[in-house]
Figure 1 (tube, rainbow, N blue to C red):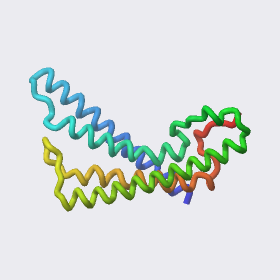
Figure 2 (cartoon, rainbow, N blue to C red; figure 1 turned 120 degrees about the vertical axis):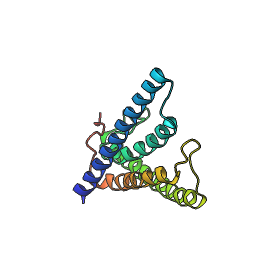
Figure 3 (spheres, helix red, strand yellow; figure 1 turned 45 degrees about the horizontal axis):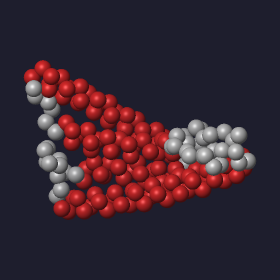
Figure 4 (cartoon, one colour; figure 1 turned 135 degrees about the horizontal axis):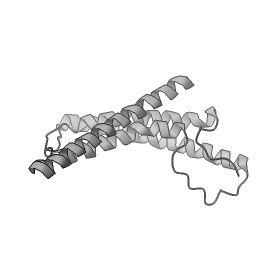
Length: 161
């Protein structure tokens, strides 16, 4: 099961990276078009906003897997290693619950936007599509967060001082 979760997190992160690469190319084309011919790519800002949100959600499981989220340890930095590990486990569980809640709400939003036929202002793209791409990343990040205390320390976790 661990290998499957690791592979899924890596696959989603690679997909998010490919999405950001495509956005970078779109931005370059739009800027060059604006500069040379006063004709940027129509809807480039909409596409960048929607795809960036989707890419971030796709990166979350990989970040959770490797302990790459921001940790504010101002009050616990000098506490003993076992206490830090317990606090990190509680934090991972709470993050997992939060990611599940976000996945649930994003899923509800997908249904609402689909039924309401909401679209973007410039391109008229259905808004439910980018929201739907966020749900798997958020749900897998939830699984990673809940499973993390039982899997041991993540690869990028801080060392106990």
